[in-house]
Image 1 (tube, rainbow over the protein chains, first blue to last red):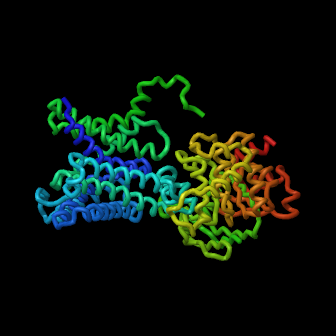
Image 2: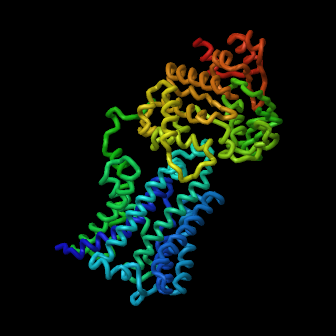
Image 3: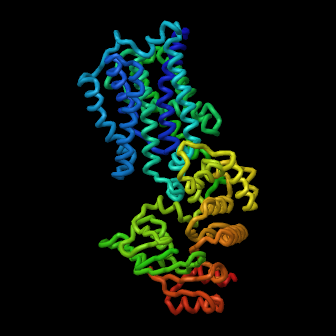
Length: 297
Length: 266
């Protein structure tokens, strides 16, 4: 029922989308901000990557996409920290504006074709045989994962973590929360854009709608990963994001094999996320409150 | 050291909720002063701390610390040299981070010269260990535990250590033992006394406990309706008793059940 080709493609896509899960780990879990820029930043990464690749620089396309993503994150952070716009609204505003920007990047066309353009994957194809898609994606995700974990243990990383954990305390430690939020959102959106950049080159096309629902897919992957691995150190959580993303792709692959129409996937993802985030509340409703709860004084 | 000149603050001006929290407060602190602050709820004690720490911008007046005008400096910059503890032990620490990581954050105040990408060094770790051991709570063996697992008293002791890890120019204690059980409160107060004395830290402490307000430190002030209504120092303070101070309270028209209660309990 499941061929090696299916497994391989689930692994490949899992690795590519794991960058979004890692980005959301940084914004949603570490900084405690639901970053709605994600959808637009993903498409921005696709658009920049495709356009730069068409211009003949498939490798340069990746850092260019990351830079573009960081700019998108910076705008959301600016709206939030300098103009005091609530974080979710700030993300939605940037996301809305990005739609036009993304079209502009693709030359006001809703898609860009890379069929005859060399990509990162076609460049390494002669050396890696049938793993030419998996190996580069896996290497990038491992490098980014390690870099993220190391970064979160540096002084700057610690202050970003504390910003999401207890902002009062962070200000009392002479750290500017506006600055830490900005750095965090720039980094997370550059990861998201890198994911989009890889996907565009992977499927040899960029489309204005590729990013739709990406924030929910990323959250679903992140939450699946969190339930798989024990809670603990930062590296465990980063690993969870990667594993969750791969598992999510396997679930999708199986669903498609079972002749589930692909239009249903977004509804399934949305349901997974709603249930997973709502689980503590659901448990509380089901459990009778009389048994030695933590209520009272 | 610390100079407050004619500080005023009104919240929600021009609305029905208008509240003058501070009106024309003047206060001078000499280096090494330990001032205890008494006053009923809403007297402006915490607002005074907020003004000094920069939680909001004051309407009038000027604040100087060590000769530097800090009136318009943002709070995170002031916290480089002002340590602050709150009544709520949860406010001063990051719960999902370890003891060691929390201390590293507090330590950053001193290490503005080091790279933001540097990590906790072995030397830092040894220093944290020594300082934790001085608290006498056994926390030095739990440096990799998340702070969220500690009790309120342990968290408050850790917060105290974090606020003083790099000796601040000024330490603000806002009823920092009020949420703890009596034995733990006593212990944290002892630690406070020890750390403040050893490092000669200039300190302001809000309390509702008259006996400890009179016994700790070298000066006591009483606030009411956003102003300082009484200042005690030297011999006058040494001769002051809880009963006489309570009388002053009544003369000022201040009623405060918590203060009365703490005096009765003595």
